[in-house]
Length: 81
Image (cartoon, rainbow, N blue to C red; front, side):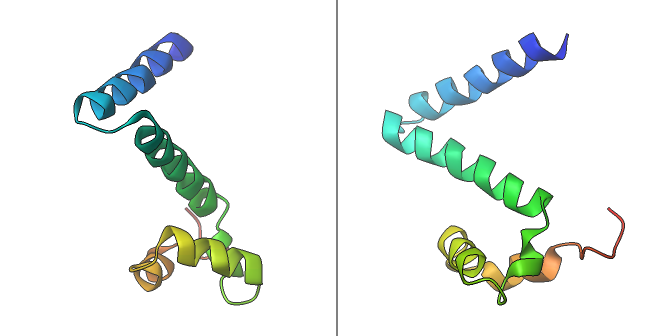
């Protein structure tokens, strides 16, 4: 089944980060930020950048150096995946 395999892989990422020297708080933030970014892109929240102050702030926080590159690469709502 998918569930056990997904849990095993997720746990292996945690163990990898810890073995690489991440402190628990750093590993948690890394994983949480990655999941947040996946959600933002999956929901195509790039369409809200510049028109919604909160979403603009969130993108600027997640991509302080590369926000324009992310916006340029993101699919538009009217484009198929």
